[in-house]
Length: 105
Image (cartoon, rainbow, N blue to C red; front, side):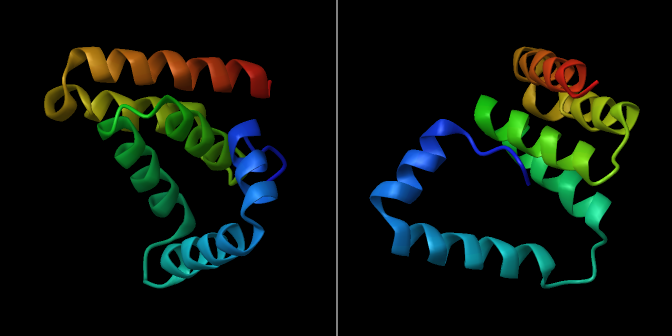
């Protein structure tokens, strides 16, 4: 992953041991089970959408694109949040995803 948000870079500088442990835990959780990479990326995006986490949505969108998830697959995942998380949450997430897609071109 090439991009790390400034806030996470600062966290890593201030608490390097904790950040290292967190990164290792994240990798272990991500790689543990039978789900393929695309499914894991879309699930993480969905969780970020449900939390209405702009940083999380942007981060997981960037990472999904890096892993080969298509813009239309990302849009579909966001649209699925409409009936579960509501229109305001879905529409905000769609805006963030579209901005990341546009920047990635």
